Length: 467
Image 1 (cartoon, rainbow, N blue to C red):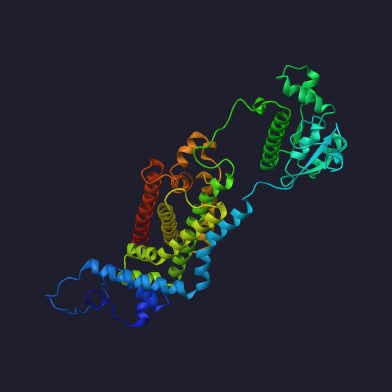
Image 2 (cartoon, rainbow, N blue to C red):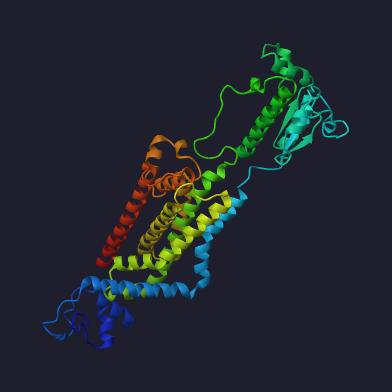
């Protein structure tokens, strides 16, 4: 029946032969999809009354959307475990990665070749000669080693540099430092003379460090620890001996940062907000595409379409039914970011949550597009991962976009996560509001992507149904 007309009436066997199928359900679906009734069918016109007014299109559309929302909600609630898993997993991943990478590297093994003093004597309480506040210029190499934080660096003694190099090559230590034989006298002379010394003093006043730089982050952590230790212990010696400690300060000084905190800032403060946003977009892509394909294979989607439902109504219904899920994902990610970083957003919490919701909606709409285009769940999973992992790096989430070639940087600037990630990071770490160009441009780009993806989904659906 369509529009008051019985569009087909015939023997079932002839109908099966006419449509070249073995299933009456397939015959029924083919008849429903046809714009015009087949000429072979016997048609009866049923008069519903010529004076009846046309139904309000908007009202009918709202009714259909409500029905689809109820249907989607019921389907989601049938599998509570999966619903909870999809809701919690983005926040759980942010929390896990945040806790694992929150601190600087610790317990890094570094060798010591101390040509000035016996290594073990430096850490023997009975032989320590340093008195707090007293000018002691003996065994400065030991004083340097004692200033190295033991929670970051584990020191191991070596008799010669060759022995240390051998263990670096075996992977037992990440590097080693060599303290020259006349280090104490040479170092003090170098510092107090303003650098006007001979080659002997210059060579013996330097602690030589050799590292395994194949693990760049570990090597960088060792370098930073050694520089900080040298700076702290040199200033302490000069202060105890009545000199101005500013003599050994670098000519280039970094003052209080405009944004962030010099003491507590680490890589996680920059990466965690971006990574949280990437998790929020990835899982809606995966879950919505798999659900869409599942409904397509079960015939639920086809029955909705042949009953008069438009594809845009299905997209709206999915958005409404999954909106609470996306809000929950965004809220939990923000809570986990607070736990991991130790603070909430510097800027507006509401603006941060809105960005999380919009990026989740963008992921969900892209999942619809994949669901319309693909026919198997495994294809959706593979495509989602193939898009997600390059996007982490190309969007500047894990690695700065400034390191890319100029052409690639220009192209990647318009990826869905690039500007939105920078906007979210600016709200979270810098406290910028919506009036800042970086923030509103991020919202604008993600809004355009959502609109374009929905439009492309509708166009592809119409093209496929007209084939």
